[in-house]
Image (cartoon, rainbow over all chains, first blue to last red; front, side):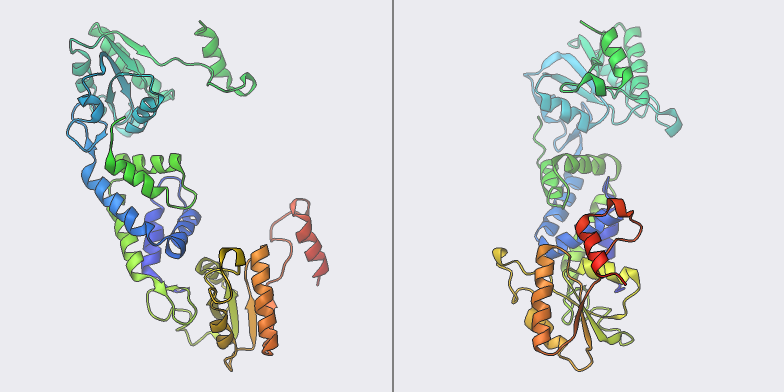
Length: 196
Length: 196
């Protein structure tokens, strides 16, 4: 087989993308080279620009090009609400719902003692200081409904409670558009308990 | 939602990759930014290097960093055989089988009159000149077994026949490892006709 160093290097680099294995990376590389050469410098430039420009917001820790992100800089938002999420992607998903008008705090992770991720790594002290600000009336814990996400929410809720700060958790229940028959039993049980 | 120009630009650029939609592109961008920043300059450099270095082999038209690719430059190969494939990816697949030792000619496409791809675009004249070289005894038409691939093989076979050059087609039949029950009927019919 011909040794194409640049091609092999491109395939290896593409394999670093999540969900991209050897076959997909080959397909992507061949596609770009044969059908979309213009996309190559464009993607290269976008990667370089994103890597250089995108930092974390000093206030909520989400991705931001400015020291303070657009949400934190928006004085029109409801300062009584503070929503805690694991990742900038989670925050973006919440924003897309257009049903939340408060501020955010992004943990950039979740408690996972086995991986060495404790309260310090998720910035718990900073979150507690933020939640103690006078304007904040409610902290919404929107971490994932996984074992680690639940544990994170539990630890944070306890710490907030000890400081007399009210915290809530996103509702668990049947997803919109789903048929009961195909929903897992744990979810149905929760939806039953939390019925309203 | 915060306007993150670099992030949006990165997501848009990632969407140009085949098989990557809005959701996958978002996931890739967030993954790179949060967990694998080092992969970003690496992929950017690989894209730039590949775009600049990878040209087409002057002889067989496959991807090559040198004017003549590794296969064409290999004098140990069997000069009696010339295998015609649609794409460099097809050629790479054939090379990986390690069961072909001849040379290649890559069409970089297939006949598709509706898309304006005729014999000129696939370099048919160049292929015929190459096939007419004294050493060549057999042209193996390894275009896809799709309607367009079959049409391409048919047109090339006719042109080769008119010049007195022998051409063969890859065998059609039941794929290795498959159970007959799940093979499509057209394939079984062909395998029956071509039984040996």
